[in-house]
Image (cartoon, rainbow, N blue to C red; front, side, top):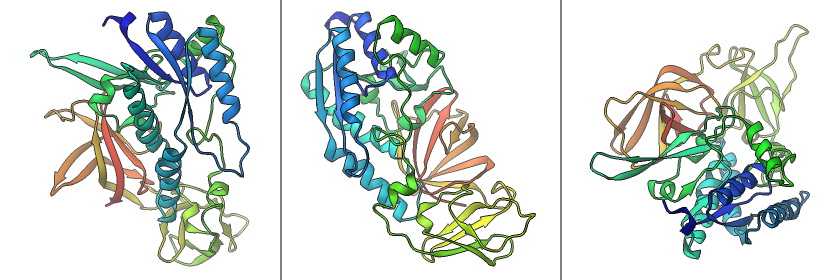
Length: 368
């Protein structure tokens, strides 16, 4: 690669990860352009995007690179926020960060950068793109987990295609620990070196999801049912506000001094009923799944599953990988887990791996 002739557009969020990504690319000799992506934020929430934009501008000034701003407000509202609200209304548990990557960072931003003449886009994601040259000379690009497994974000990137991977750089994915990133930020003299990590919903930040949803979904009183006895033991304000495994937010009216905490193990959207159990896991309560039916399947890289490859999957971010198999029948993709899984919620992303490589994923539709 003749780096001096290559232009890379870096998505700058105003945080330390994307800032260091831009600095590393500039140091390597790329023609770097910093881009701050403006997205939708609710008018009832404190606005923070202007502060983040100033931080991104400060980084560009320090590095001596051009700064641009891209307005993807409509795309973010339609593809991320509206999608998330609709999924919760249906009683499902969505992954909005996956849709943010698919439609905003590697959708609107990626497409715009390519039209602008960029050779690559780059972000501060903790992941790696591995370039493989086959025996026939064909080059393929593969998505791998970051070296820092505590920070690895490949789970949220399963929608990336081989073409997108061939045009994407993750400059910090090879680093071992987040402390290295902050040390590099200090070395480059970046103002974001000590800035706290963003948390919560992509771009919007840390929010209470129930409070957020209540601005768009009306509360509706329903029964809380004990999974063991089948009796009504309390009430809740709307089944769509809860996810499997939760232990807070509902009211238990029938309890004794020796009661243990109750956990959500099931939901019935049609009857607005919440099913709970005092058994901590759904394994103990008998609510497990070995077969997971998947929709919206997407394969990264060249989209080919090699025969005989040992597969594993996770249904939650940072969850331990579990061995599985894949079956496709009449266009339906089914994931078979060797060990039954707990709290498998429709709407969640299920992501497949072969060792360190992220092969792709899909959306959980139902389980058996």
